[in-house]
Length: 148
Length: 137
Image (cartoon, rainbow over all chains, first blue to last red; front, side, top):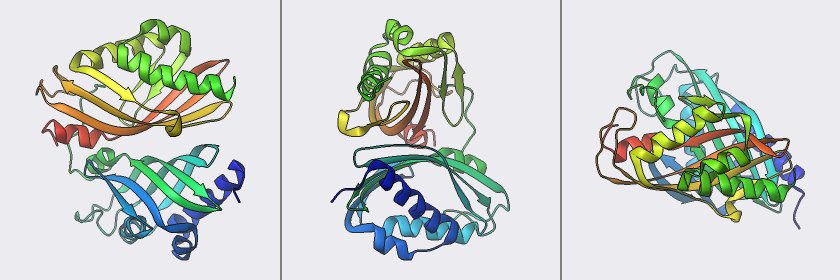
């Protein structure tokens, strides 16, 4: 059984809202297939891990560091078995992000996520995040000169 | 605009414009109000965008962006593509002098279409990874 792209998008939107904005991790088990391929880039190194563990760890870290964190989906495109979201995460760094000391600053960073859905579950995820922008806000990376 | 012409425009954007410097394709595929938006900069209009493409293709030799239909998600007025970039760093970029290093990053671009042309492309790419490969982060 495969759902329509609209149905996939609705599931994906609810999933990300539940996890990021409500801290409801039960959906990680119910909506991510255990052998799902999770592709992300951390520290500029692409990696692929199975299941929900990687995503769970990232959300846990950010929610602990920024208790008021909020995800907003800025735009979406969906077709076939894929849903793409362009999003913004915003929150106050009271706990220290990615092991860095807490800055107390309001942090805002963007990303784009693609999920591939099968029978209403996420079976593959690709996430690209503006890591450099986040590090710059934390004072851990230089601001770039105006260039491409 | 149809899903198929949108897909073709996404291919043209990455494979013709960025990967071969085809400025005619810029005029054919992009709206005159085209905005190219990254997290740290943007271009507005075709001339600014052409200048950016030229500048990047000068700093990076054999700049190539690869995607395929499996990695393009397209609707009637929007599309998104996951792509892989490879190049050799032969000129100054973002204040970093030529390293002669071979680099490669991944990213996603979110496209909006109007009146048969691309009116906006928003890029989420691994600039951190690129700077690290160049030894600058």
